Length: 481
Image (cartoon, rainbow, N blue to C red; front, side, top):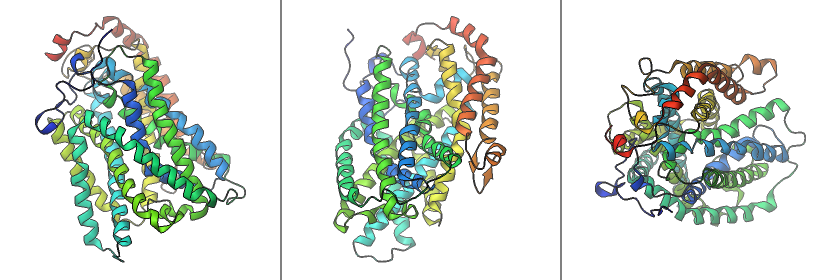
């Protein structure tokens, strides 16, 4: 049986910075195991952001039981993240390098751009919440009205600190999140113990309609499994090809579903007595005694830095897949500067929760059809890729006509149209289907269905023919590309 490496051999470069970007990970550096991904995702998702998501969900007008049912159902979407983490060990590279198989090297750039914008949006959200938490700590320390100067200083500090872990890379992220899992879990237990007796089970008498129920499902699915699906292979690519797919799926699903359900449920429960208008990191703190504010905010800030590290890592390798000739560390620095700048706008905006809600709903439009196309393409290839051809941008099996695989592009466009036709992002946009159904949001389901079915119909024969030409990986050939 092949020996499993417990540390990377050539992953780290100068100063411990990971040297690997979207290039192929050779077998000698495949050090990870499924359990590493369990701890990584658990450590990332035991996070105050998910408390906020649960509290925001309660603001839709649901009863607590309605909100919990949505949380339990919608978080099943983490199976999508689990499935979109199985291609990395086979291909030895990141998501939007593998994406060249379905869209072509040039066609994939458009989807990489969409993903980069999505990652930067989540990074911006995380940095903004970190600054707001630091402001709350400052007030606790006796500064009654921290002004713009404090916000700017905290913003710059947050950007500088946030840079460290994504620069160090994959191995350090996985190890750090495993260590942080335990204090994050302890915080959850204490928070739950301090608030459970205050929960108002019947704070909402009648609840929301079925139309709003579907809108809540769309919100949570986007914030959970669907929202992370495009990140999966960026972290699973250090698994050896021989590892069990079943164990990998189970490890990732349990490591994501359990903390998300627990934290969102707690967030919704807390919102029953602090009010959904307090659905923020500082607003939720009114749920407990003042002595707990310090540990709550300090650990919450650490949590936010941790989860943001995943987004920054993925956005960096996505920039490389987009075609920018940057080293991975350069891409991480560039992304940090951009998200810190955008966070500056967010923390001075008066409607942060509305911005968060609308951003999460609109990412459905591209992520839902893309996820379906990505998985259908993988299945048509009999769950295999030509790793050497994925590394080629001007030739190879996946180059086809001008580097664009038109069935993928057409399916993506039609899937996005189908998603837009069923999206409810009131008051800025209400789709025809949502208008006809008095506000129901079916955008995820229409996007997944149309994107996947259209791609299957258009690409089935050609992709199956390509699959017959795919060869077993030859590392010397791949590394020579």
